[in-house]
Length: 385
Ligand code: BGC
Image (cartoon, rainbow, N blue to C red):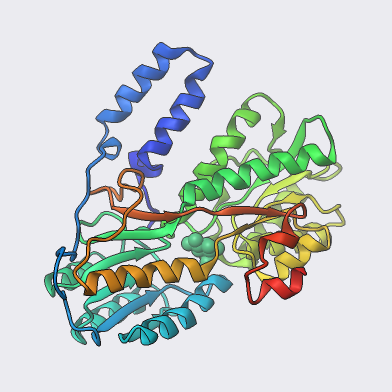
C-alpha cells in the first residue's frame, strides 16, 4: 500500500518548508501556528535514529559474508544497472552477493528476503516493491542480527530498518515541478498553461514524495490560475500509475486527452519518470497534438536522446553508480565495525521512526546542460558528446 500515510505523507522538514511557503503570504503568526501544529503530529518528530549494526570498533562480521540485495521489478533502467553494479562491487570487496529481482511481485520479494536471512546474510539492502509489506521478513532479518538498509525506496511502518540510502526524492519532485514551469515559460512567456499531472505507483514509497515535491512548486501556480489542469485531476490518488507501467500512463493520457482536450492545447505534463514520459508522448502524438513540455527522471537512454532531439523537456540525473557505490561503502563500514556516515537524520520518517539517511543530490537535465551532464557516464557520455 502507499507510503507516508496520513501525516507522514511528506518528510517533516520538507513539510515545514511547504508550510512556510504556503503561509508566507498569510503572515508569520499563521506560519508559526501551523508549524507548531505540525510538530505535534507523530511524523513531525525529529528522532535522532538508531545506529543499526555499527559497533564502532573491530570486525562486526567476516569479510566473506553473504550480503542480500532485494531489488523490485525491472520498472526502469536504473534497477537493471544496480543488479550488475551490486554483483560486481560486492564481489570485488570480498563479500558474497545475493542479488535478486522480484519480478513476480510482493510475495516473491518476501520469500527472497526470508531466504537471504536463512542463508545468513549479514546486511540486507532492500529496494522494496511495496515498502509497507515486508514487516515480518524485516523482523526476521533483525532477529537474526542483520543490518537493514533501505535502498532508493524507504521501508515503511517498521522499526526494523537501520539506514536509508537514496537520492533526495522530495528534491527530485521539486526539480521536476520547477523544470515544468521553466519549460512552459520558455515556450510562451505568459500563462495560463494547460497541464496534466502524473504520479508513480502508489505502492512505491517514493511516488508520493516525488509528487509532493513537484506539487510544492506547482500548487501555488494552480491556485493562482497560471496553471490549469483541465481534467481537474490534481490529487495523488487521481494521478497514480499502477506498477509504474507505461501502458497504464498511456491509457490514462488517452482518456484525459479525449475527455478534456478536444480543441484545447495540452501545454505541459508532469511525468514522474522517463518511461512514463515516453508513454505519455506516444499518447499525445497519437491524438495529433503537439509535443507538450514534459518532465522525466532516470536519464534513460531513449529519453536522453529525446531531450537531444528537442522532444522530452527534462530528466533527472541520479547516477546509479554513485548510489550503489555508497550502499557498498555502508556495507564495508558495517563489516569493519565503523560508524556509518549519515547526512540526514530528520527528513525521512517511515511512520514509526525517522530513519538515518545518506542522501545524494539529484541533478536536473534539460537541453541546456545535456551535453555536459553525462561526461563521466560510460553509457550516456558517448551519446551526448
Ligand atoms: C525510483 C525511480 C524509478 C521508479 C520506477 C523509483 O522508486 O526512485 O528512479 O523511476 O522507481 O522504477
